[in-house]
Structures are given as structure tokens and as C-alpha cells.
Image 1 (cartoon, rainbow, N blue to C red):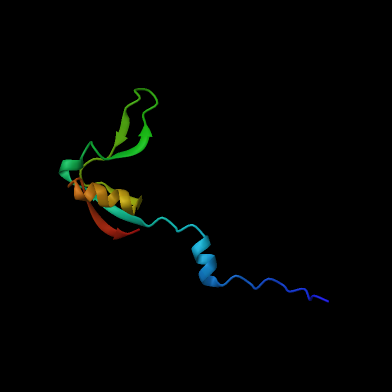
Image 2: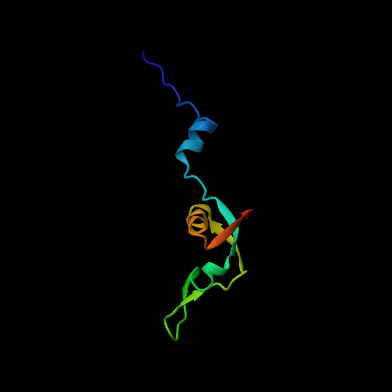
Length: 82
């Protein structure tokens, strides 16, 4: 007679692979070249213009990949992990 087996519990490594990786978040400062170009992703409801950051603004919790692209273009300076 065949015996029933219970499935083995998933290992922590297998669970980590199956779970989506969290997005890395960083802080960056807007440089003079990026003033008025780096935007929040929001739009002014009256004019429809995108809302932008001024020179020297520090943005918290930005996606690391996007921040790296902006830094490569000389628009921001990445300050470190958020």
C-alpha cells in the first residue's frame, strides 16, 4: 500500500526567490541643471503642468534605478539609501 507523504516546507531561499524583490529606495538632491526638469510625477490640476523640484530640493524614497539615470545625466546627486 502506498504511503502518503507531506510536501516538504519551502526553504527560506526558495521563498526569497519566489517573492518579488523590494525596490531599492534612495535620497537625492536636485542639482542646478535639474531644477525645473526633475518632476514629482504629479500635475497641477488647473494648468496641467507637471510639478517640478527646485535646485537643492532633497527627494526622499526615490527609486534607485531612476535616481541613477538622473545622476548619469547630471540632474541630481544621489545622497544614499532612504
